[in-house]
Image (tube, rainbow over all chains, first blue to last red; front, side, top):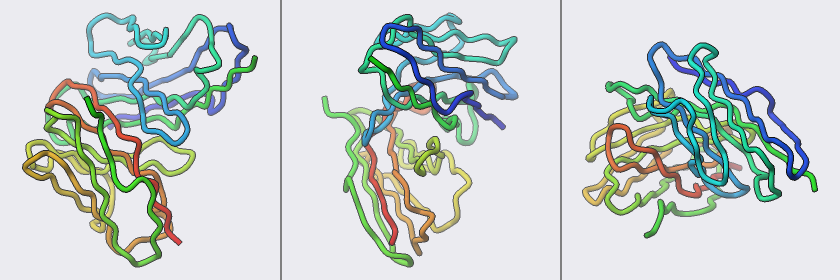
Length: 117
Length: 113
């Protein structure tokens, strides 16, 4: 079974400050990992994905994440927060092998990011 | 190109009723997945369909069912609605069965009175 834990349901930063959103995963097989962003009353937008290539993954809007197998982590960072980054962020894991429910994404509980001027 | 489209955007039903939600995938995408997102939680996997066949099912009761049509659009049906079924229902499409990212629609907000 796979699971995702996002540490911190709410994170607050000042505009221009570093953004760090934490994600730890549990998986019995090597996983694929994803970060999605959700703005109010909208669906999920893919920020970036890790699919066993480079461990440092760059995504859209200046976000990046680093896969650390030894720490079972996939934390999301952005050097300088912008007001438009305020949203809810979800980390998700998926099996990287076939079988039933191969395409199933397992999501964390989400982290709400607030950006103060 | 149009993204994943879902209809209706909002729906209000009463307990015991039945509901059908619809999803049109991105053009060329053959896989559709359904997720339930209860307020304050992450999305939970309900079903995945690829080439009109069910390829995965989450831990949901038999009141939940789905199907995929020859044009790859999909419907999610929920019977005997309960108050706990109130949620945002998200549809996601991907190009194939394997290592392709899933693209989400804006969802259908279902409220049960």
